[in-house]
Length: 112
Image (cartoon, rainbow, N blue to C red; front, side, top):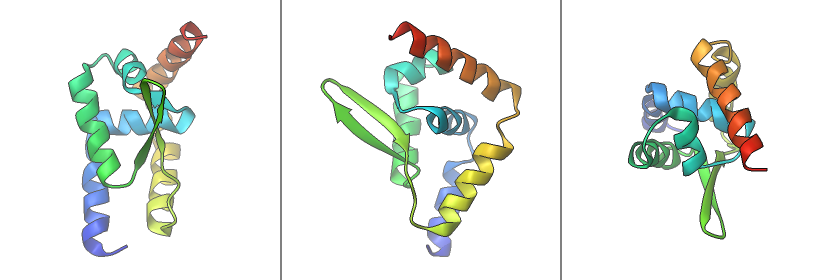
């Protein structure tokens, strides 16, 4: 990874919604619809944030029938992986993140 790529990666993390998405995807692969329900946001906004995360290699998508599921990318780059580990561990105690994980449980239980 070069300095420009590192800067772009860090910039893509400088947003509350994107950090919340990363926190959720650390726990489970999710569709845009599921993310919208948990985050209380519209599809356009969530998709915009997912696109930014996808462009910087933080998330990847996988199509299953009519749904697209998003998940965190396993990086081969040490800086990227260390940064993601640090973020997901360090920010896990934030109240907003905890509330999102409770909503995640509710959304997952309703889909069963």
